[in-house]
Length: 403
Figure 1 (cartoon, helix red, strand yellow):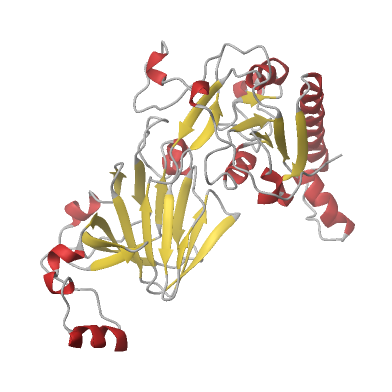
Figure 2 (tube, helix red, strand yellow):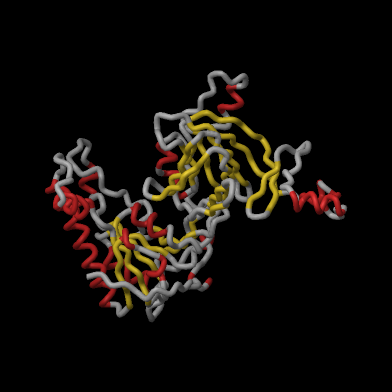
């Protein structure tokens, strides 16, 4: 059923003609960037598609059952019903693509790799929000647009049910522009240049360890930085970074003496300190750390505007316009009882990281972990690691819902 594509990596450039600014639309939207016209062209705009297909819980548990490892309390009838809905959606999608004469390849979500992006000009993720997030991690350059399809949406009848009679574990499909219910109508619109293509801000995160500097994949929804154990305290120092020019602050570095050159070759030189505070480097650039605060807590959430309606909102964060370029941070269960300035510290628990600002964390616990858009993708931290966070990651071209 599934076919793969050749293993060369090709980046597809999205022509600017496909986009128009949001402020040309009738609905007012702030801080927005791009939007496609809903009027289709006469020939398909996208001709080489990659369809990423979710592996359902029914398929996963069936494999475990064959090995005698499936949980006993599973509701097999419910799982199979959702699997059948997903399967019907996939088959219907492939039929629509064939009828519109576009070339496509299919890959299971768990088998997706960068080699599958060869010569692809549109990626379609079939499943739910989790499938969209997983697919987006491979589009770190932001040059290939992504369309999400909710294969098993919550019906209008389920939304009206107050008791737990429906299956509340269905995906909300907040990142899916199309559902199984309207797919036959909207997929051709997208293929012929229609729909609503938006540019979504993503989180750039760089981790600097003792001997390495790692740039993590851009996060579309959020980052959770915390101790691997939810019962343990997460200790870190939080501050903000201002870019500086070391030459302006250390004139002697411009014209070093022979003794200074020999000294720099024989032993490492610490970064200078001054009235500005501690200085650190990321990507070869020097930054001054300001407004530092020692934090004992359950960790920290950092979200984009897209992710502000997910875990950030549940944790008590502020709602944001979905097209905002700012980020939001929230300290979880901040321990401030012994702080001499409780009110001032409490005001720092939840705030905005504006475009152009950089957040800095110095991890002070023995172990830590960064969870990227959920629990499937993570990066381990150790004592002394430094974390650089801002909104300068390449934005994602994501289709949003339209009428």
